[in-house]
Length: 227
Image (cartoon, rainbow, N blue to C red; front, side, top):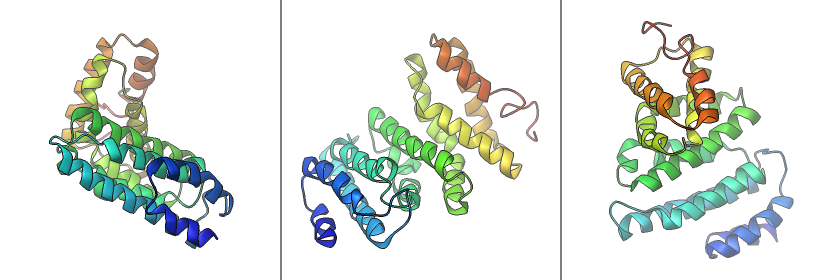
């Protein structure tokens, strides 16, 4: 029965899929434990995302992720909310297929922000639930390597309310620095300096305090390139 349901997932409409995921998850091991059937379900969900991305890229330029938005939401629900399997495959998919500069440049600004925010939700989940998993940490460090561009994409949002992704990405940078003695690249430092100046002008006091705390001199914005 479970195998047949997983097979149906590849073809059903998104609304039907959203109603199927929770019942399917009840038949799988809980607590984000990797299992063959959970892995198979996640791979099916990733295939749905890939198909939606192709459709959205063909529909308009720059692309609006109309279909992709819903499919990513389903995959995140399956991994984060329902714990159908380990988040590793989904995290790798974000790193390898969705968060690169060349891909993001094909999207309109709202869709760029969507990808970064959804990936950040996954990062936040992994930081809390899998803080020491070496393979997941490799994915986090890949995101940190891309942060100079990701933060540039988010920077215009500071004129409104800062993106929820911003503190999560900064925390990932801090985690890498504290765990590896990592040195911030000049490009990232330049982006962080501009970010700090923009945040100081932001009217959103609570968000501003939290983010500025992460950018304190003793953490990211040191007086020299070697902190």
